[in-house]
Image 1 (cartoon, one colour):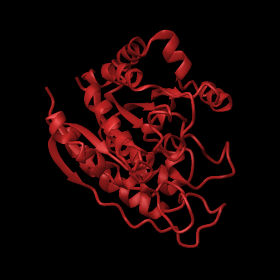
Image 2 (tube, helix red, strand yellow):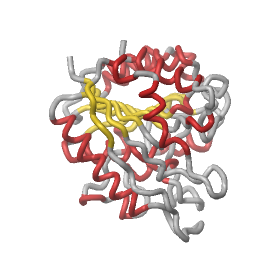
Image 3 (spheres, helix red, strand yellow):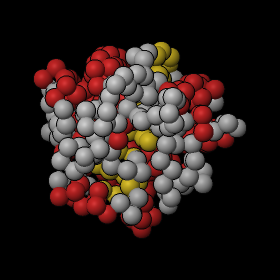
Length: 297
């Protein structure tokens, strides 16, 4: 049994403001899940917090590249330091975000150690880059592209380790079936995509077990699981910045996560995007905590 370590990464640097003069509330995710006693329920050790820089886009304008880029680069290195320490010690980090840009910290940490894959459990592919979009800016919708070396050098080539992930080592689960153009691009790059419809047709548990087994090859040292709360249907998880319809239900998500997290090759998990500002009663946060805890049982 590996030791679970809960580490907070409450960064919102990678999202656009939800309204003028405001900042994204997903930086409160970690605190909300801690209120649900997630540390105690997982039997985890305390990993503390990696405090992010101030959210300040300054005079950034569309066309200027990724906003908060310098702060993101600095934060990615610091978060990677903490994750690397735990992984090398044989711990299992459970990283509570934050927006999806925190996944860069995990990818950089694992790239320092060896070659790792990524299982992205997400409603969207977070693969926006200069080759497919003229609206680059929010790293929280671009982190997989950045991690695979697409985008500006100050984020894609930290420590000269570009790319942090190889295309063929990335797997996507839970993308909405309606996102045909996104799926076509990923397929052309030989990045496997399992949509919500695929999961229901073939079975979440069976597909997850097959994926975990596929990572058991000598070329790979393991894999990381990235969980974006928006993979859940908005009827049960409305507290996200992009609540797209036709998502997974809680039992389906648990069935998907369990075989992945149980694999001895899984190096850790991060949880992102849930925004307590959009959940005044805390019901969505309680559900998300239940999903994470149940996925480890």
